[in-house]
Amino acid sequence: MTLRLTTLPNGMRVLTDAMDTVETASLGVWVDVGTRHEPAEINGVAHVLEHMAFKGTERRSARAIAEEIEAVGGHLNAYTSREHTAYYAKVLANDAPLAVDILADILQHSVFDQTELERERAVILQEIGQANDTPDDIIYDLFQEQAYPSQPMGRPVLGRPEIIKDLSRDAVSGYLSHNYGAEGMILTAAGRVDHDRLVEQAGKLFAGLPRRGGASTEPANYVGGDHREERDLEQVHVMLGFPGFGFRDPDYYAASVLSTAFGGGMSSRLFQEIREKRGLVYSIYSFVHAYSDGGLFGVYAGTGEDEVAELMPVLCEEIGRLSEGLDAGEVQRARAQLKAGILMSLESTSARCEQQANHMLVFGAPLDVQELVASIEAVDEAALLRVAQRLQGTRPTLTALGPIGRIEPLDRLSERLSA
Image (cartoon, rainbow, N blue to C red; front, side, top):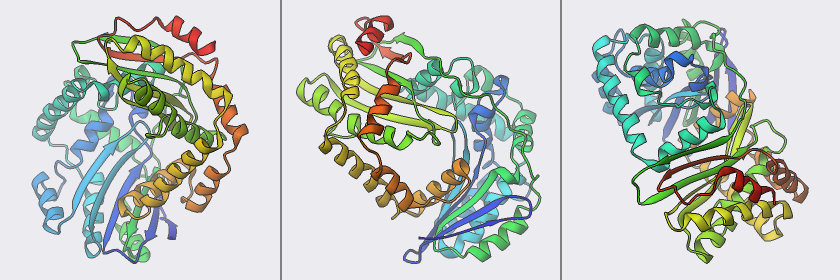
């Protein structure tokens, strides 16, 4: 892995991860603002901006943007998360300069045409509707909101329909001009890339960016609680979780190993005990969601109306058993799964590009894969027990959708968890 990092005069960082064995390049601009940096009254504006960036600039129409990148066989895309926004492309190596030019154009010279905004507003409302019609998708937003109620970290990434319907052009353009600053933006590229050439081009194309953005947010304050919605569904969709571990938490890697062993694959405890042995679910897994200042540790399950009554006590029992520790085989398998996922991703230019960008945004330094693998290897029994103990005694978060009448009250589930 050949990494090079340069900081431009305006504070924007350029990081390349050279891969001489490929003929492509993945590159993009990652910005250190997302949903949690939005004022409540314009929740969803970061996501709307992500859409509108592709809808025309001072020198390119929306169609021209699409045609130029596809004329060379490449593609453009973007996504918004709670803490970051990304705009990225994948192209043949020789076409990397075109991709950089388009990215610089859409991030600095978008016109936010009102007609395009109205059209895209309708598209985003359909996207929200689709998410609401997908229980195993929307339940994550409901879980997040219940864990962090009435605060930026709990707001939906897509925004709320009543806000999106009235969001103005000035709100979208103002959000960009106020929050997108060079010091919080990283141009990352992986594949067959020339670092010096990329730095030279970026220095010219992004020179007009303001040095600093004005984004701010409240600290994440986990609260937890109970949210249930009765819906006419075939399955009950359930999430049960706890305050988790931020990226900088000393126990972050131990939490990742614990989650993988607990519910990260077909050999995991949850899959074997709840699906294979008891047949109570079709899908069940645990997860770790990490943020800059906190996180969530939880379990998702999709089950039947009759089965949910048996599922929840068993799930609480399995969570309680974590404090008894894991056996050596479970730990070894979990470490192997995590390491394999990391090392296999190194074969993808897109994955390497995104990994480096996210690591730069969180830690301010490039990702050292060997250091990451060593951190996973260093997780021992004491660290795993410490994570399990940290989960115990915290207020849980429960969200459920579907025929929910047979799920016990949260107080009863809490008693089971602390038994």
